[in-house]
Image (cartoon, rainbow, N blue to C red; front, side, top):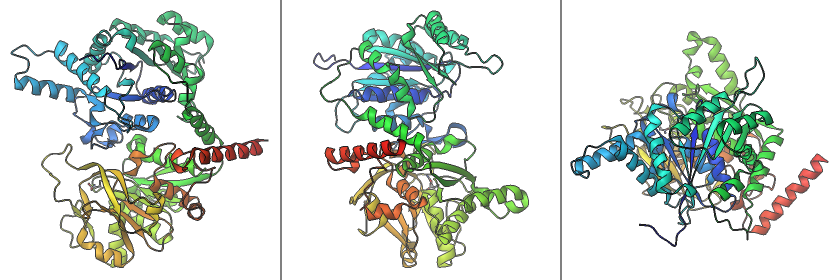
Length: 603
Ligand code: GLN
């Protein structure tokens, strides 16, 4: 039903041309961010035209990390970009796949909802897509329960892909359903600059716009991804051949960090264009500080001088996207600690003794990297390969007192290591890897159902209650009584073994709400040896680094003690996070102190 009092929802469809992997997701999130900085409430939907229902069964080798939402949805990692850039909380329905749409339509067909009609791609699938988008767009995502004003929809893949066709057709119809003035289209394309001539080539962009128009969608903005800033002649060519004004051709060239992308768009007046094109109501009474704080962030990143070396001991180290959120969380924390992150990946299996014979060079290289690190992180993972290497990394960190953060499997490996080498249970293991171990220190959670692979883990947001008030992690979390973080696991620390572990100095300082699950581990007599059963990286934000990650980075660059001495409050140099300051005045004060420091250091 149409509500005459509420303004209509506005939609921005972001499509891609020429090739995938040019940063469409970052550009789409940046568009959202610049609108948010104008005080507009923004939500987003990511469409993945594959047949899988969700990302739950994906191999990180093929698709990169599986991102987990509060509601337990296992989704495409691009949803992580939206959450981080827009500081929103999305739901599983914000990720649409062909599989989900077909499942929905087939279920309705079985219920007899189509009254005996032939069920077809057009109109049934295309209608289902449009209904889904309209329904999800209105869901509040900001925590303040207010309906969003703009929904950014990113269509995965490139225009012309067979899988994407029903979606393109759905949006061709959708622009009439919601009216042209409430719908606009941003096309992200590539302008290559081949070395042979050194010239920017606009032909691929022209061809992909022709294809888009042929399918019934006309671009309002054409974003050209290029290595160098777009030359005027290239901009004019795109404008002329693609039938748009030069101002509608936007250049996003390669930049030092993704933090610059919203600024590039802003400089080319994308915000003003969209506000005008979609007739958005903007409150001018209180200009948002978001953009200037974002600019500070981008500048800070460029000015970082000191480096901190963190090694990530993992299994899917060949594809960087496999640990996308972990890497982002490390970057957020490094920036807050004013250090450039030098991240090294170690293939866990390379640390194992048999590697000495199989490939001695790899073995020595891996150990050299591990030994040279300021801090070690063992992220989540599945499957036995590399677990002994991870256990060795935890052992090195514990004995040599190197800062260590174990996430999920990383916590479990630290527990196994401690049980074997401190308690002396030589055969201690997780039943995931050795079902017959006499010392099952990590066991399968009773309620998990192994019959089906997708969506059967302990997933999503859960509460962790601090059991001790005098523990480092509670202080890092600013002394709250409980924290809510996201989970994705089937195994847990065996509650029966906790007493023995604690007696030897491995403390479980945070438990699940029912007290059953060990959520946070801290080691006595170590500068920073932490394990968490949850994945704090999923809710880390550029301006709100995740506390366990911040602790790791501060400890790794020797700043944790100073942070503790300040009562776990950041120095103005460290952070621009509004939440770190109680009043607006305190934040202003901190920011102005920083500008004084900046002017003195540059003058
Ligand atoms: N494989 C382990 C489990 O299922 C760890 C999972 C993870 O690290 N996300 O409990």
